[in-house]
Length: 356
Image 1: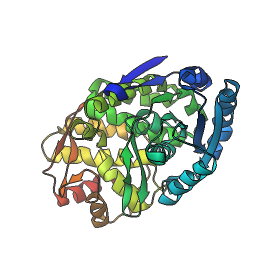
Image 2: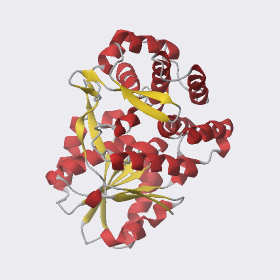
Image 3: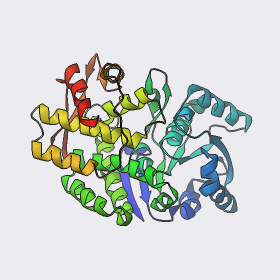
């Protein structure tokens, strides 16, 4: 088993990565079982695939366990669903000792984490990611949240889990399109922090059927853990993790949450950010071409019908805007991310041409 420590002093925790890890969760968590209620928050389809087996294994190991399900898709990240779960937990006699197990993708992890941070002013939780995107990104680092009409993740908190339990074999049960979508986040890590990893990803993508997902997940988790350990609150270095996300989130908001997969939106956003990096003189033409060639090995949807002014309006509501200034993530070179405050509205709108 690969253990990656995310170092945050007393709030440090491990990211466990191993094939067939789901079967070992009762053993991993046994020392944390003190007779409290363990609550799985998931989606019903995931409960049928993995959750009911996990719950049975936990009960056989003397864990008191129950579950709550969320609807599928970004619609679950709403104030109504958040409130419903809190009310249901009270009805189930959950208390401050209850521990949440967030079994699902980014949507489940974001909502369950926000519930954990809010219920009775904070209870413990673990992330058990079920998508590639969640395994390498959203389950790590404590970002939680829900969406409102004005934008994605504008309500939430940074609240660290007690641990992250990653089983790459779960990916075998996912639709191929979902897995490929998540590879956008994997590419991001190579682009901002490790050019050798980026080159490896590009080579691996030439034969997607033999893609070494466990190896890729481990390296991506190492990079994420390193960055969050150095900058938990996103005051500087952690902003690099938003490479591709500023335009990506705007695209999601513009086309409607759920109509464009998050990984697809990030991949399209990285193409825009790469073009901006080149136009601003940070990234060479050759490096930008390499980045695009890697991203283009993924099958991305067409986004030809969009209004640049609408996209820009969503960008201006982005969480990276502070004191009216957008901190936009660019690349100084492949494997070396940075941020700039010098980006113009025109440049953002012009960058959209590369994905139309």
